Image (cartoon, rainbow, N blue to C red; front, side):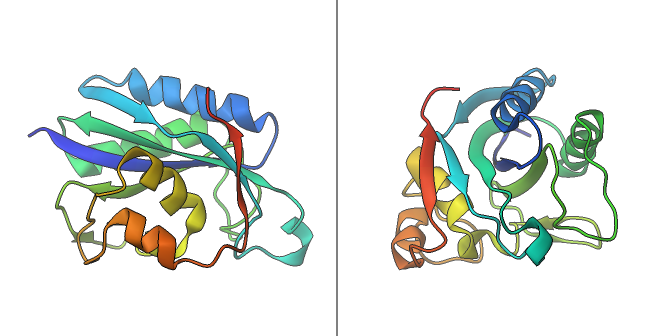
Length: 169
C-alpha cells in the first residue's frame, strides 16, 4: 500500500552535510521509495543533551517520500542505514552521531510499540523538525495533532534557533 512518510535527518559528527546527502541518496535508492522531496538544511543547537555535547551543533532536514512496504520494514532499513553510516547506539541516546533518522509520520498510521512510535512522540515540540516540515507541507495534519504543521510552528518558541544552512543539497 502506497503511503506518504516524513523522515527527519540529523547529523552532528564529522562532515554533517555530506552525511545528510549520503542518507538522502541511500533512502532515495531504496526499492519502493519514490517521490522524495527534501527541505532545506538547517543548523540547530542540540536539544536535550548533556553539557559535554552542548556546543556540538546539528544539521537537520526533512524528507517526504512515498513508500510501498511495511513501516516495520522501513524502520529496519533506516536502522541499517544509520549503522552503515557509523551510528553507534549506546546508553547515551543523545551522544553525537554521524546520522540520525526518525520517522515523523506515516500517512494516518498510529503505532506504539517498544521499538517504533509513529507519529514521532516529540515531533511537535522540536522546531528543528517542524520548521523544515512546514517548508515542505505547511497544511499537513499529523495524527494526534489538530493543528497544521504551520500552526504548530507558529506556536513554538523561537529558541533554540533553527538557522538556514543550505537550500540546495
